[in-house]
Amino acid sequence: MKLQFSNVAALVFLIFTYPILSLVGADLNSDRQALLDFSSNFPHVRRLNWNVTTPVCTSWVGVTCNSNGNRVIAIRLPGVGLIGPIPAKSIGKLDALRVLSLRSNDLNGDLPSDIPSIPSLQYLYLQNNNFSGVVPDTLSPKLIAFDISFNSVSGIIPSGFQNLKGLTCLNLQNNSISGAIPSLDLPRLKFLNFSHNNLNGSIPSSLQKFPYSSFIGNSLLCGPPLNHCSSISPSPSPSPTYLPHYQKYNSTLKKKFGLGSILALAIGASAFLCLLVLIISVCCLKRKNSAGKGILKGKISGGGKNEITSKDFGSGVQEAEKNKLFFFEGSSYSFDLEDLLRASAEVLGKGSYGTTYKAVLEEGTTVVVKRLKEVGVGKREFEQQMEIVGRVGQHPNVFPLRAYYYSKDEKLVVYNYMPGGNLFSLLHGNRGAGRTPLDWDTRMKIFLGTAKGVAFIHSEGGGKFTHGNIKASNVLITEDLDGSISDVGLSPLMNSPATMSRITGYRAPEVTDSRKITQKSDVYSFGVLILEMLTGKTPLQYQGYDNVVDLPRWVKSVVREEWTAEVFDEELIRGQHVEEEMVQMLQIALACVAKAPDMRPIMDHVVRMIEEIRQPELKYRTSSESESNVQVQTP
Ligand SMILES: Nc1ncnc2c1ncn2[C@@H]1O[C@H](COP(=O)(O)OP(=O)(O)OP(=O)(O)O)[C@@H](O)[C@H]1O
Image (cartoon, rainbow, N blue to C red; front, side, top):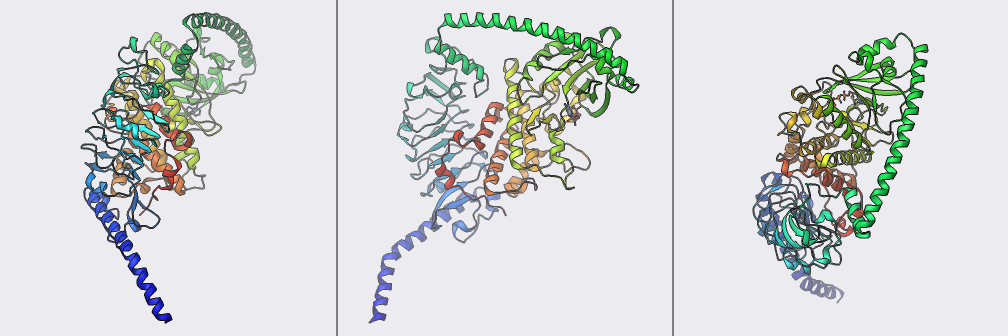
């Protein structure tokens, strides 16, 4: 009887579960088939264990399944070199899919309409590809993030977006989308970017809370936070996506006060500034007097070795000009040129612009003096450039110039001495021989600091200033292990050809001489710098170092042929969280080293992207997405 009961129970169990089991089997099979169809379009992805007959989730790189392991819920293949159109129909069959991230590949063809409408889809990342076609108007009502930025998508913004009540991120920037912006009232929307499209008309009031940077680059768009609609004129915005602080401040100021109050404020501020300049001048005069006393003191106690140094970096200084060292505001030095010429010095290195010396003055101050060779501009132009350099140096991540000297035969620039050295030695120095590896947090800090410094440089000179020589030895390391970009403003002063060979590995392909240096070529060099920090390889040919001359090309080929994890520096200890950040940094770097300058992001955007990796409050992804993150698998 007992036996009979268990038989019946087993039968009942089978009757009830069979349909479920067979359904699961069918899902599993159909998901597997869909993935196989998808991967057959991308042969190199197939090689990454995609062509397996075992259940879907055991070995499919970039694929995550639900907890039962029977349905695909996420595909993440960012920056792995996928080329061509997406086989959208096969992905469209994955009807349990929640996350699809195919960003930063070379995908093209029409933006698929089957994919965004998958009913379960929450996160769709297709940015940084070459998609064309129009913005899809049927979208999954569950969408939380929709990012198709940096493609060539046209069409209009469908009013159907209004139904996406859970949407927190909507990024359509840098496409060719036209027409008016529909009125969208999306309660959960935190990040919105429609910038650099062909949108027109007025910004709906429901979206006016978003910043200026969300809308710039649409010449026919008006209304807050852009210009008032009646005074619409072609967009004043240059490329920066993020508004410089002063502009933001200016617009809020205008809102708060009337024109009269601003005028009064400006007059008051100018008067205050004049007073300040007067006080500073008096202080400087006093300091000069005391510096004069220093020279005398030096003469009394000066030793013979100092004569050698003046030969080194002051041989072109005429006797009559010895007091013509120009100090920048904020410099606390009280020495004069004569003191400098008497200092004992050692050569730090010979760079593109000349020889660099570490000079220890008699009073004990240590400075760095660069003796510029092959300056190709006259005094006036040199001084004008120095004026800009002085201003740029006020940013914490830009290494400030303290003083300069210009005469026909000698051009010197003076900086503080940085005992922390430069990023090149921190990253490559002493490899293997008991060195302390540069950890990921420090690398992230240096990425961000340096990016901020370069972005600030790009905001100067009416948004046209460039650096022109971004490389690891020009990133000096501060006491708190932050990056400070040096050699600012020197490249435009130089005769072109002599300097070009030294930056080969960092130079953008379009830069054939220094007149072709642009902000986008700086972005390229910064991308190479990120790759250098991620891979631990140097893009310059130095004996005894692990070098790869075309670092971007090498990284792209490894990522394509093997798997992302292979490119990373062995010194980096890789927890899962860190590996995710490393992959994200790799994507930023690859965007920066895009061959076509127009495809590279602007520096402000690079800063923002790096910040988003570290500051969850800036991220438009929510925690639920990270829960469904795929495991980054390594071979
Ligand atoms: N202010 C400084 N404090 C400490 N070290 C410095 C300072 N400025 C430059 N250096 C170091 O001195 C060395 C020589 O610098 P220099 O700028 O002349 O050459 P480079 O950086 O190798 O090449 P390039 O001239 O193309 O930038 C480099 O190792 C550099 O990091």
